[in-house]
Image 1 (spheres, rainbow, N blue to C red):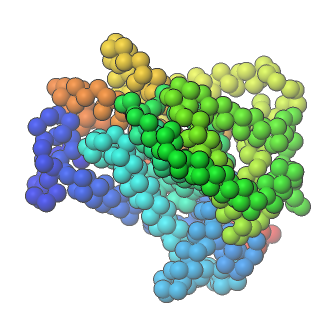
Image 2: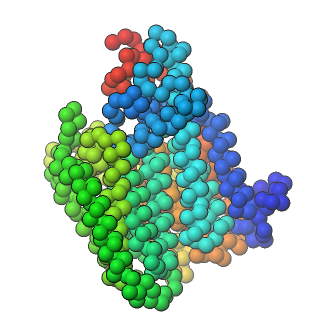
Image 3: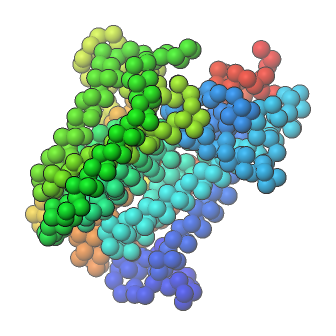
Length: 545
């Protein structure tokens, strides 16, 4: 981003007179190109060449399940449930096999364990193919984020800086070189949120309900891959309430056009059709708590109850938003029905390679999350109902740990967006002193969501892979402050602090990937994990069972 390198004229920024403009020396095309090249260089320096067993969680299990689908055999891994990641990798391997790039794409084609060199090479080639697919996802995520941020903020320099900060955030920097389910889920949700922010800023438009429907579809797909997306979805009423049109709009399509009612009726008809097509999934998901060999814990509040509460919460959020920002009843109804259409279409994706366990996990996310959270945090598995001393202590420890990580001194973290949060806090103080309460409310909604979801993530130690779920919200908050507090772009400390932030972002984000190159542990760590790969005879580096 910043630097004194000779820049080709075709990629040079048209103006670099202010300190912030000097931090963005390339034009729009040049900035996206340099970000992509940086990601590619990072990927091939550390990541692509890892042994296939280096990041066994989850590289090995996703490849194994892709092999199963290509055999064809049913999917066996349902933890997240990882449905789209496994499905897309299976198709990606088939495409590469057709091009002659990857030879082994199914379980029967894997060489016998006795031929260790061939066995290892088959798994390595498939794993490297999966890592390349993750890189493609990451590049697409960053590009979509950049264009959506530009469309929302109407400032290409800030959008380019935001894209850089996302590309070299701790979560994305790690997930672009391994196979994890959070990557697709975070990309879908973040793009959906930005679509809604753009729609909110535009005011009444004929296409706004369609934008809501598309956002709903993306969020449903996020749930199909990583059920933790539920917490982000539930935060939407808080995230969106303070964002509305910046200027008063004259009456338009939904308030004055004779075509509004026919359009609403078309959306209602589409809702009924989509609900009918997805009805079997809905009924099975809401009435089935377990399948043969797959049993989830029973909570005091079941899926039917908490999904009803979530639906009411989201509906109330839309109603309150409509009242606050004076959205017409006709458009509010259209947006509500469009959201249902998007959700139903997203659920239909489960039919591509249907397995009942995927449906059970998607419709029972809290049970699944409780199972894994309780395994990592025994305090959560107590039989006592409600708040107990141990649970209260866990919550307090989680909050204190989240705060400690924000200092970076009390608890270091491979998360460079911590430094960006420092800027967000400082800039928010400036906004408070200027009594820009709407901006303060917008940033507060974003950051409280980040800290709240990170606190929930402490149930499993808030691993680096989880950063990608909330890092985009920090970047969005920072970009919003840069645009709204425009005079900060001309401050004399902007350039040196900006350079320091860029350098810290690069160094901290690359520390963890590079560290994996020098890890001394061997493949033996897979030996106790046969339960995830039951159809593998045994690993060649493990004793025979």
